Amino acid sequence: MIVHRIENKVFCSNSYIIHFEGNQRAWMIDCGDISNIETYLDDNSLVLDGIMLTHTHYDHIYGLPLALETH
Image (cartoon, rainbow, N blue to C red):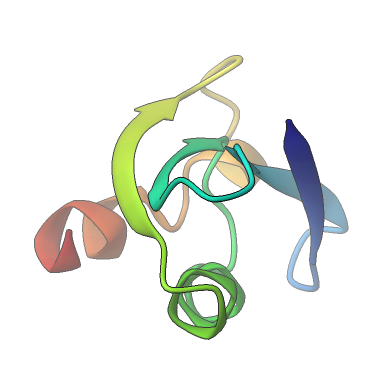
């Protein structure tokens, strides 16, 4: 299992992308800076299969509307 941490610059929180090597399906945990998340997904030919929110503080969900719109 690969767990990739993405540091969100706006609020200094973290988002994570979890996937298995050799599998193109990925899950995101919390959704901050969507541009950094999309870059990682694109660079690794991953498809977002789901999103898990640990809680609904703004620093963990502010990228969610754009993520849902584009995936």
